[in-house]
Amino acid sequence: MARAEPPAASFERRVLRSAAEYHYLRVRLELPDGVTRPTVAQFKQLVVSALRELHGEVGAALPVDVLTYEEKTVSAILRVISSGLVRLWSALTLLGFYQNRRCAFRVLQTSPFLLALAGNSRDLVLD
Amino acid sequence: MSVPSLKRIRQVPRHLLVCEKGHARHPRSRHAAHVWDHAYNCRVSFLIPECGLLPEVLKSTIADFGEYYLVRNLSVHELVSHEFIDAFVKKGSCYALTYNTKIDQDNTAALLPNAITIDLTDSSFHPDSKKHNRVLWALKDKKPLEFDILLAWYHTGAEESTVMSYFSKHQIQALKPKITFSTIRDLQCPVLDSNELEGKPEESCSTEELFEWLGAVWNQVSLDNKSSSFLSTYCCPQPNTVVEKAFLCTITGFIIPEKITQLLEQLCCYFGEPKLAYWLTLTVHGFADSPVSWRESEHGFHKGGENLYNFVIFRNLDYWLQMAVGSYDDCPP
Image 1: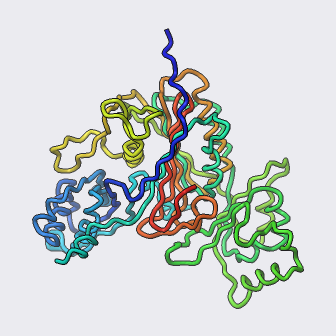
Image 2 (image 1 turned 45 degrees about the horizontal axis):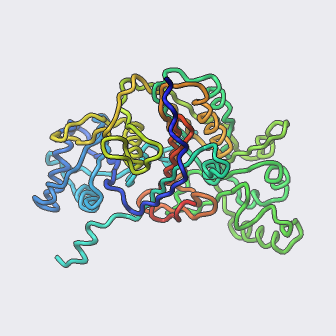
Image 3 (image 1 turned 120 degrees about the vertical axis):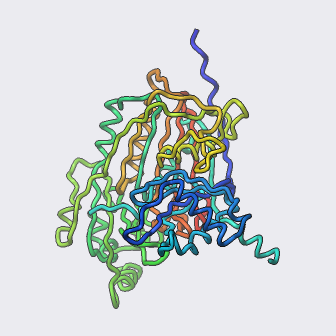
């Protein structure tokens, strides 16, 4: 016997204001030539030590997920709890050294919606 | 450290996520209106679970997305000239947006088919009127504003598009949207109940969980991490099922609402025949540097220029719609 389809949904609208649990950052680590590119674990460790350097042990305990990592370009998508966005971003901004060589984190795109990071019109090259 | 500083360190930029549910065949359903109202779209993508091969009708809908144009060093006053209005604005739907301008740094201009602020179709905007002359003076005097402009023109008439010949004195390129297809095997998909936007514990996932999961899929994030993992703890929301395969398609370029509406309708018709999938999704990203998001609502770029929407179309043609905007945007209608 065929399963009956459920009745059609009634209209409903919800507006969620600043309610995203997480924020997402697409970042790239700029390194000078000759520096071995970090593995994903080393990259994560670098993020943790950047947090420790600026915000101490409590800052280092901030849960940050490395959702994607591309070793070739040393770029990643990070996820952090929304209340930790300022701490993470400031820590990445002020990180100046990797293996005693100058480096810089570039935040390429940030959003409370991971889906927004899938498309960036500023990267659209038409010609 | 004082309390106000502690509060600021935990602040996040304001953002909105509007979630709607309804039925696509309801006579008063507004799902199509939301598509029509969102003029400037740079990326359209859809995901169909349990689908390995795209039906022919969907293939031809995508192939029929048409061309758009990139006109270099075009003066804005040429878009308000009567030759342009008569050739394009009055004969169809004309969309234009400056290319490679950052709305938080540069001047930006855009043209909507219903022409806002300077209403090109207004009867008082005829060639000898004070209004017309004043507008032209403002745009031409001193240093005329020039931009590289993306242009698209939709018309239902039989004649060929004359955009290339009209702008032949400028550097103009006709471009086709870029289309990519892919298939994912053994994909964990959230279980959804179209009547439960907030999800039901142990039974279905919420609209926010679906929205994040979709972001994970399109960004190729691993969906299967352990909570003890050092690198990432993200995993597919529960409850979920594993589908053998899922079809993904992405279209990028300057895509107008007319084409997205046709695609949405064909995706609704996908369930006209029995299918294994319970739902499919259609995601549309707006231009980060567009001056408007929905209708004439001002759009801005604070930490990000997101203005995107996503449909989940269910087998019984119920739909969910999520519309997401950032800090400098009005609430979507």
